[in-house]
Length: 470
Image 1 (tube, rainbow, N blue to C red):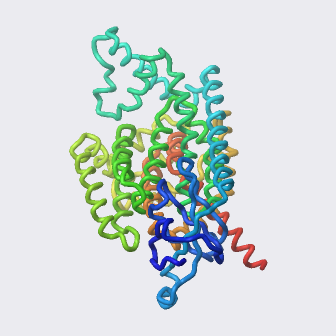
Image 2 (cartoon, rainbow, N blue to C red):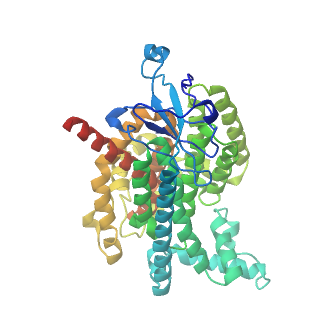
Image 3 (cartoon, rainbow, N blue to C red):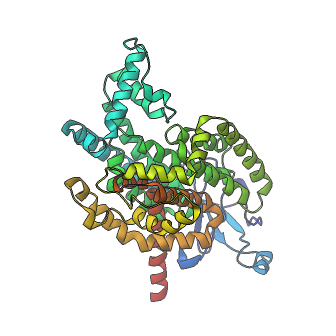
């Protein structure tokens, strides 16, 4: 039985299982009758020519579709795709994929937990991230204030800077009189990033890309390190990946809760880093404005609701700080401050206080953002630890470029939120990072998405090579 509704997958009850040509799996979400994206069979470099189920552990349902165009779609060309849905009866495949993801998350968590304990016991954690000591001191002082051992709260809470991570440290000291439990929580949170990047990559590309992305995120040295320390970076990264996944679900109309989750994620990000409010809030709005074909009215309403939520944020101090951070003179001043006294300063005398000067420095800033620390900049044992990862990034750069190019050509509407978020974060940190150490930490917030594009680029190249050989 065929379901002649281009760009809209029918419910499972409307389709009967039967044989299909050129199987291509469509991604199902939390409900079997929910919206599923249109499937392309025989895409560029054959990226979606093999089965690729999306696993929902709570439901265990996937669907499949074949590209069998109706006469109308043939006249319209490849842009109109008619889906034929089937319910997979092989539950073993679904269990196998879900089990694989659970194992990756488990071993990623074990690796981070062990490293967190080792770094804490040896005292190396403070050397790797000196601000860890600041968070611990403020958290301890706030916990003492809560129990009545201090008359006033720490002054850092009154300075206007994001206070969420200070409160997390205070809770850890209040309950356990130590920051170790918070470090362990950070380690688990870092492993859960794999859990959220997997369905996003599977939705935009396929499960082969999703698997490789999850592995890269699970064991990339910098991501393992920053999630094993008492710093806020992993919370920001987790929220950005969570936001991207829920924005994708919202765009496709799969979950009504996704709307509130997107707004909550944006608001929470500002409690950790206020100055990236614009980078996190604009991409979902643009994605909803562009929308998917056939859902413009729905997306317009959702964009209006999300915009209303952002108006509330604009009335808060977070928005004022974020908008103030867009001022180029402010960025230039912060950049000079980070470069002062840093042995790894990046062009500390460069002036980016005007749009023309900022644009002139941007190519050089992007070069430093992606490729530093360079091998000749290594001057200590700690910097030497970054060399293996940098060699990996150098090797993956062609695949990243290839993956981004393919996404721009073939998945622009679906991936516009991820592309915009990654681009805005990259430009912001390329201009504002004044030393290699700070830039190395900030790059972790976007490198997860670059690893996804790298996995897609490798798949495109492999499929292109196999097509040429055939």
